[in-house]
Image 1 (cartoon, rainbow over the protein chains, first blue to last red):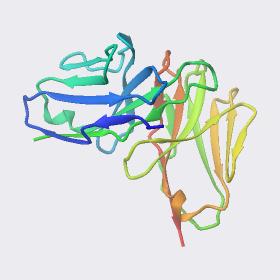
Image 2: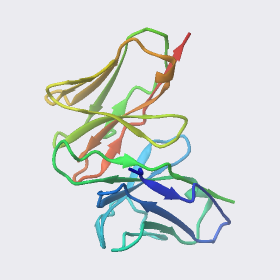
Image 3: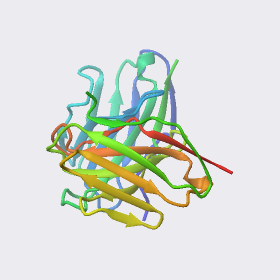
Image 4: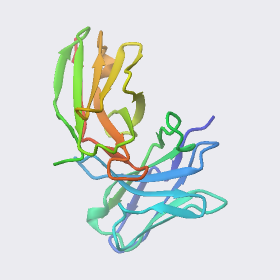
Length: 116
Length: 111
């Protein structure tokens, strides 16, 4: 049973370019979360999605960032016009459902974004 | 006040020692509680969920005190491979189903 998959693992972009990060949840999981870890900081929640729906985007920056989880295919985190401050590790997690005791989130290996 | 607070450490302990980590959370409406470990800023890996009744998994014991809003993790007979950053994680701390992470406690187990 494959775990959460993310690609690319490393991404280098110049300032002003677009970054697209992809996440495929674990088999049987329909809930996807994105978290960001800035250098020397803890993980911060960005957005929570179900298929074709954004459930909670309270952690997303107001501009340049968007996320989707289409009916078919992986979840995409898109960052437009990247700036140096966007350099971070972006982790995706998935969970099956919200029943107490069955709601653990499992993380993918992350995408390390470097903006030059 | 941070939503989830942990002592950052580092805790340097000899192999075989028992070490305890503590964590407090600010939102009494928090729903679920977990310990994750993170190695060298790789992905966090779920160590265990934490319940009010306490739970044990081998050398690891976790405890939750809802009245004090306090979570603990005890590691017995520590191994070199236990060296990592231990993350206290709360779900529903700010409302909803997102996870809120503490900044982590670093553990170094030495020969």
